[in-house]
Image (cartoon, rainbow, N blue to C red):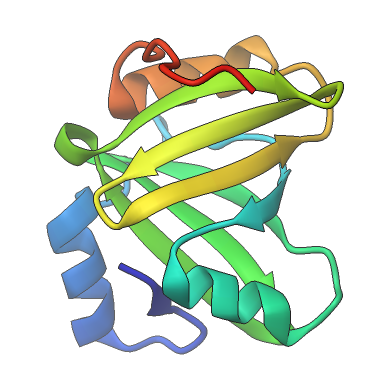
Length: 138
């Protein structure tokens, strides 16, 4: 679920690509604007608690989903998200827009720095399908 992608380890990247698919060709590449990583399942929460620095994150679209990237200290981490096991929705919590990602391993919360752009919404829709309806309104 959570991969340290700091080093160019071909086997590790192949495992990430097995989950989320290979990167799109250079002429189709797309990603999202940066978001603040607020919460995640076990291993992500442990990394978030490791330092008080803000964890900025963004998605890179792949052939079968997307990869969520973020940094902790000097390490780069990635969470491969397969399209068939990931859903998303945006809601407002205490006046802030929050992207809630329902991943196979648990919920990931990302605070949006502004109203999501058309490009960000498009990347999420292409990666995971249309926005799901929130069952819990916060």
